[in-house]
Length: 255
Image 1: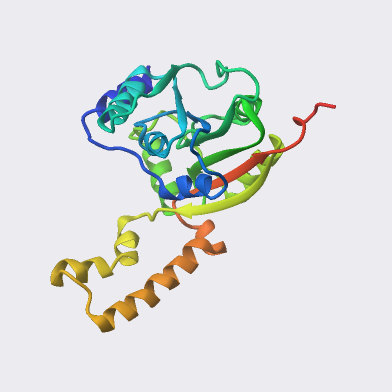
Image 2: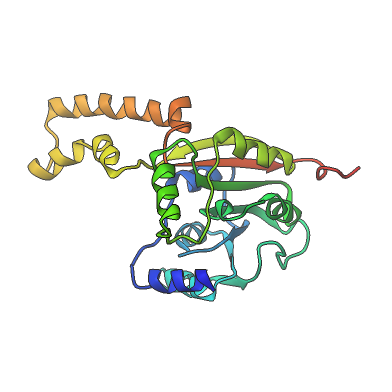
């Protein structure tokens, strides 16, 4: 299995995913303590383990056993015991309306038709529950880089991958029967843009602190970047986007 090989390589990399924007979106809507949360495509378990530390009952679903083993290690390092499910995302082995939150990052873009996946996730999500979807954003230099790599046969994240505009992602969730309640953008590509965004760190490193006058300057500088990131332009140019949807009413096509 292609993804098994990928996760075996990742096991030795030390990489653990952690996405503050996604976690903030979820926690802004509810206190996660005692909530049942499902991550589809569990990966390294970084986000899931953070939610578990906040008191959530977190379940991780992945078809790749090496991925689940990495997640188990991540949980174990934090003194947590994960609930691991090796299963296909098209057939989630839980009853209807079981979870309060479902989320996935870097998952939906690997499927030509993601609609059946969202439909199945809606089935196991309770009425009023939330779904958080985080994917690559279409209008980014990262998209150009990715498609060049795929054309050359050098793309390591599966043989095929797509990307979404914010409007496309919102449309997918709306069509699947969710009400979109929040959207965010994150990450810079190439890294030169990230360095520009965090120039103040150079001063901190060189002088071990920020001078009083520069603190005022960097506060203004940081504020301008935040306006960009949270505004229309950021949502349409940064590397990844996320959308939070809420399950309300009956499933599409049902009377």
